[in-house]
Length: 91
Image (cartoon, rainbow, N blue to C red):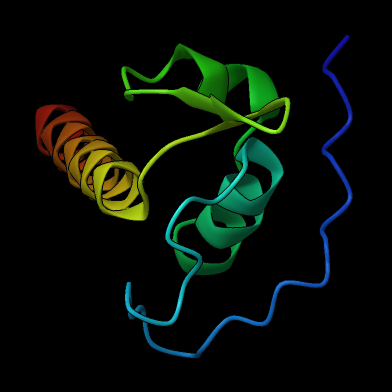
């Protein structure tokens, strides 16, 4: 049974991805919200598997927003490549 998606927080996100406007050290829940807004849904468990340099601040796991966005972009492009390859193989 899939785990329910975590309800979003009240993080105000700009329509265009701008790392300077995002929190410098987002928590995992904020990362989920950012990822959902710009790339699509993701689960907390999937995010925990990412190879990010996690830091514990005030009992919350955080990572630099630049590292998070670089990994999210890499995974998004990889998923698009796999989808194109599967589509071309089916034709």
